[in-house]
Length: 165
Image 1 (tube, one colour):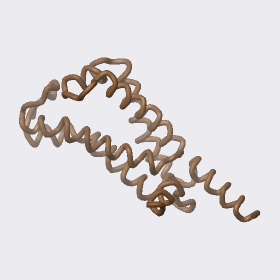
Image 2 (cartoon, one colour):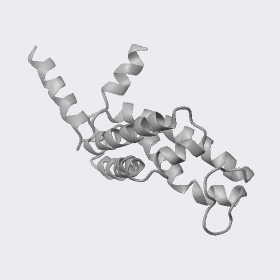
Image 3 (cartoon, rainbow, N blue to C red):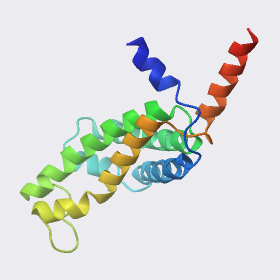
């Protein structure tokens, strides 16, 4: 277990500078989606109520807060692997709670505005952002935040302190 924690908390320091692009994309989307859950009830508590989540007000506020804070963490490259892991779980839950019922035509949420409205075609169209967020989070979990990140900065500082001792 300690190896897993070390792997998550000590990301590599020699991978690509370009990871910032993916962190900004995914972090920005999560950040703005979190804000929208607070601003528009149909995106937050209303959506969680329709989906049948227990304690929808508290659940929506928790998820929105996590998306805002986690989105900022991804953009800054802070606790990147841990945040990416938690976002992977969130995206799997989001896909399972919204796309299965869309496929079956039993979704409590409004159907897509244009055909296909149910079935595989509707799912393939509606899942695109969930799929992108899931895969980018998986990439960041596996590869870490890149050199232009606070994780990298703190890791280098830690390595310097260890060399002085």
